[in-house]
Image (cartoon, rainbow, N blue to C red):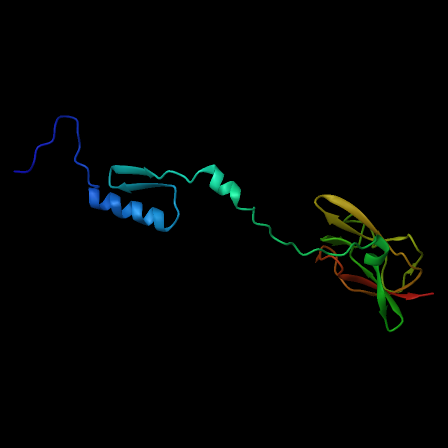
Length: 163
């Protein structure tokens, strides 16, 4: 028959060769801890970590994030001209709403007269309703987005024919 085990001790399915193999894999992949399960057997291996002093010697890795130049609200909303038309752009990312509430009429439509500082739409961002104002006086020539549509920063919303 086979080799008998002392009472209460199970045979280990993880031999020394397998443990050495797992340690090499951990080292090659820079792993600190690993747990291996094989049937009902479990094995937990943990390597010592490098000294903190070695880690502190290396400067932290810095990642450069693209920086958008500062834009005033007026610059973000009233864009350049398009054949004599002024463009109102979205000053933030969010959801465009043409009406103050679902059963209300639109703030403006094609042909509506607008004055500077007149609310033309709402953009919801993070559950905050942001009123977007015309910034220029004139007539709405084109509405470029639909009610409930997601909009991006700088996306054109309206074209206005200035007075």
